[in-house]
Amino acid sequence: MKTFGKIFNFCVYVLLYAPLLIMVFFSFNESKSTSVFTGFSLKWYNELFSKSDVMEALRNTIVLAIASSFIATVLGTIAAVGLYKMRNKYLYSTMNTVTNLPMMNPDIVTGVSLMLLFVFAGKLLGLSEYLNFFTLLIAHITFNIPYVILNVLPKLRQTDVHLYEAALDLGCTPIKAFFKVVMPAIMPGVISGALMSFTLSLDDFVISYYTTGADFQTLPLKIFAMTKKTVKPDMYALSTLIFVTILVLLIVINVVQEKSERKIKGGK
Image (cartoon, rainbow, N blue to C red; front, side, top):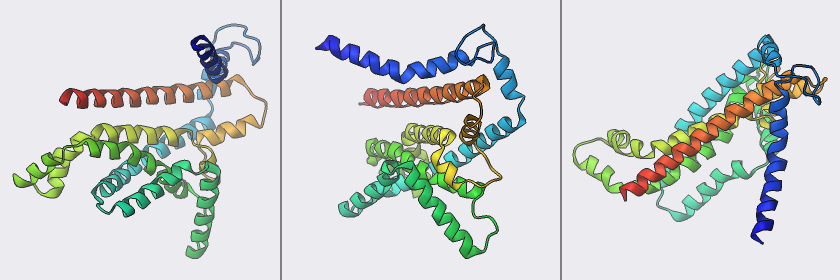
């Protein structure tokens, strides 16, 4: 039975990662073929970086990911503290459910609903363009905040409340006590939430597709437009760079969380 389980797991991992490995492999192909490997070359990476439209989409994606993750981290941390401070269990349960809804909701439902909201608000305000960079930024902040709360809230529960009270007794103001005592304790959760927000914003397609304007295009949207034409290895190179970036970020998130858990266990 154990042997069958190992074989099954192996087959699952092959199905999950074989297409990615093939994509990475052919991104270094010397020829234009996407099925026959003729030799190792960085030709398609050079061609990728020489395209101004792709570089502009990459720059837009990075700016959007940094801005949305930063704002979502600040708002999500404040929201997590607010949830932690709630004493009414019914209100806490309701707010916790509302917080989890965006994570459980299908992306297409979130994207369409946000688009309708922005169009409705744009008509009320008499705007000439209903969708632009700011609507896209708001959309990314919206779906990032629950993930920040999900990372910060457990760290707040692990924090010794007596340390905060001791800081108050020693003369600290509530805000100063929070930044001196609570913030260092929950910092691993804040960092994990920020990195997760950055990762989710970096490769989001569905929500971005419905909430962006014609003058702002992210990298996933650019890749989608490229797939409508003949697929060239430069798209493999682009996808490889995105895959490696997200992989590195996920490794960093796991390392931060593991160090935090070891620190907590060591303290105990």
